[in-house]
Image 1: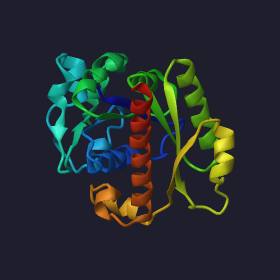
Image 2: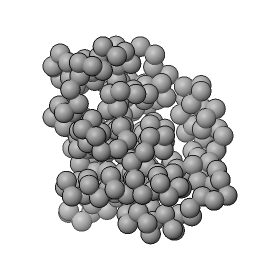
Image 3: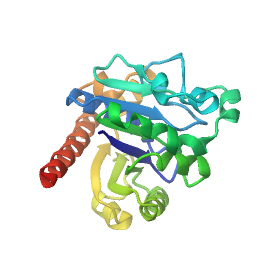
Length: 245
C-alpha cells in the first residue's frame, strides 16, 4: 500500500505545485511508482508542469460524474510518474464538490508507492478537503515570517485533525538578504525541516518550458535539493518497515 502525502501551505505562491511535480519525478527516478494529483480545483496548474495541455478525463470529471478516479490517471513522459489532472474551465470548477476529495483520492493508494496531492493554500473548505485526502503532510513555506506563520497554523490544524506532519520544505531560500535562516524557520514552525530548496533561476526557466527542473537540469542547485528530499522520504519508508518487522 502506498503513502498518501498532501503538499500543503498557508499562503499561495510558496511553490507547492513546483514541489509536487519535482518530488514526483525525483521519486520516480529512485524507482518508486508515483501519482501526482491536482487537488487544487480552482487554479489547476499541476498538468502544466508536466507539459500536459489536454489530458482527457480530470479529477473534476470524477467528482461531477462519479466513477473511479483511476480512470483519470494519465501517464507522463517520465518513467513511473503519473498524473491526475484538474480541469481549467470555470464550468467544471463550479460543478465539482471538493468535499468529496477525501473519499475519492484514497482509492489510488493500492496502485502506487506514493500519491502526492497538490493542495490549495489556506484553511478554506476546498483546501481542507484536499489536505485531509492524504494521511501524511509535507508543508511548503518561503523564508518570510508571514509565510512561515501561516503555514505553521495549517500544520497545527492538520495535526489536530489526526494527520502526520512529516515536516516542512523551506522553498526559494536565498532570494533576499533578509530571508529567515533555516534554523530560525524550524524553531518557529515547530515541525522538522525536511529540505531547503535554494532560489534557482533554472526553476522558472524549466517551468516556462513545461519541464520540472529535476528533468530540465539534473545538475542544478534546486534539482539536488529535490532529490535530497525524495531520498529522505524513501529513508523514512525504509526505517518504518524495519521497525514493523
